[in-house]
Length: 276
Image (cartoon, rainbow, N blue to C red; front, top):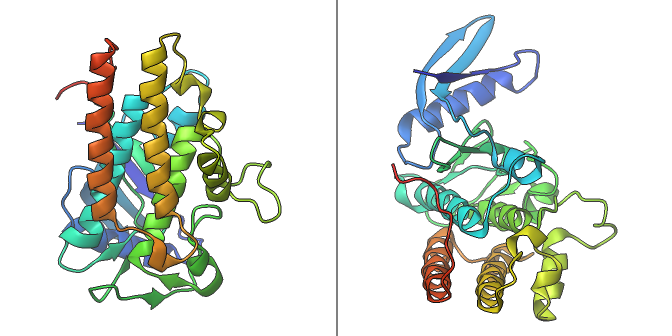
């Protein structure tokens, strides 16, 4: 079988702790949308993990490669996969797990374009409920929640914020670190402003709306508007105002069902992932 080898750079200060955390997390969790650890190797001068190989690479590659493209249904499926993985980590495991570093590079796609969340090097176990902890380990700029970046506060709501940013990026093909976001303007605020103005077609990836059929265009616009309303709620500045991943999964599945019905009524042919 083909496998992927993740080798840890032992010259980095946090390499040993990252290896231990990732071993602990991935050896205990089981979900179809999480990367599976097959085995590992730990020696004084080498530490590595053997993982399931994901032949279609990362979501980041698909978003920004000139030779790759994802239609609206494929992106929606990937969003549901990632949300399902987070729902399991936050609510389906005996102790809540916060990933802490969600980004398109850490979302990997298998043969059937099913998404798997990877890289648990700075993941954190919580004490249950809405517990929080503090850490000095920084996540990736642009994706981390405000309270995490400023105070190192880790809760499940921080992952929810990151998820919201990823979905916005997936729908707009704009990175949260894009040069257009200067001063106080951020990706989530930019999207929210256009959503309020009922002009979401101005910000989404133009390739998602490319259709001459009026009904097809309207069903896509309505689908994307619903997705954006959801992820604006995910990426609220205040953690208390964000929804949880159980609500996010349920809402995304409802959006998918409606979009599928609308598209079928209009005679559109939707390109989905292959059936395994």
